[in-house]
Image (cartoon, rainbow, N blue to C red):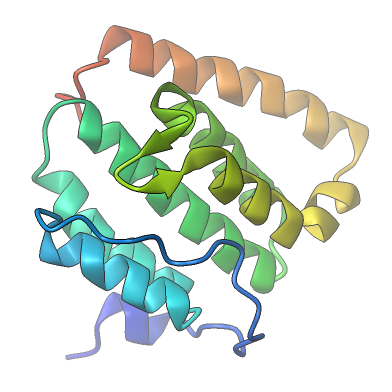
Length: 159
């Protein structure tokens, strides 16, 4: 049976990572380790798939961290597929979800990660029209509201 990752064709490898693989903490779950291995291989949809398994079984604030990383990977995946709106929306979600973890969490330089993803999808951002950009503020507010209602991460959050 074909996996989700196999159904979703990855873009050709560019050799340019938006963010280098950080040192991995000894207590890191296997799915988190695999996420970064796939990240280094530029398999961004597969990153989403493996970390989603960890995210679904994690409770507390770390759940938001994992979900923000998933959003980063999906932003790059969508950009490389030519889905500019999807890429920018995923980055916006990641920015909000990772904000509480600045400056560094679980060995990840949050600012460096977000800047790297933002630079990687810059063409997507610049291709949005004014109406599409104006919708991003509402998206940010919606994600912030969900986080405020459930800062502990006990409720499933849509990617």
